[in-house]
Length: 213
Image (cartoon, rainbow, N blue to C red):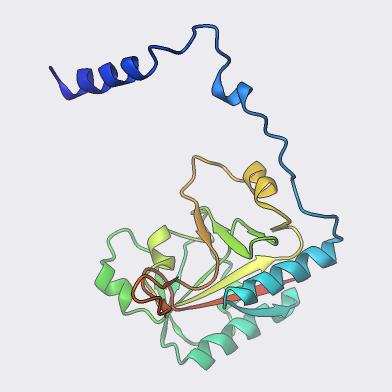
């Protein structure tokens, strides 16, 4: 008997007592979830996003569109970054005011090469106010998932208000489930060992979010 036949046999035995006329799971389970908790204006939604990002220890900055290159240059300078990873579709103007060496997002880059890069700058797919979560979907301005997991410093640009939603249900309606989604709530951290919080274990140690608009 093959592994496939064993698995299918177990499935058949598990379903043996299920009536043939039983409604499918997706129809039988009521899903009257709230799409958002309370009513908020656009400004209040953005404020909530900023608060929850900070709660997760992300560093939040705000600026107008024309100020973004200066802000990115300042953040890279304050970090002492000598190199920055750049997704292929990132707006070149975002780094126009910075003299930091730019490293392209390449498929052949090794983890060791990525680890030697000081920072990465990306856009995002959207940001969720109620959870303080940034979502990346691998679009050209975000690059491959690994470039936001290996470098120690991630600067993520969020366009306000068009990329900000209130809740997870609203985010799911706008995201493509076939894309490689990365959900980020603050810098990478774990408390698995003796409940001591350690940051930078499986992602950037520092997340800086720039709200532009």
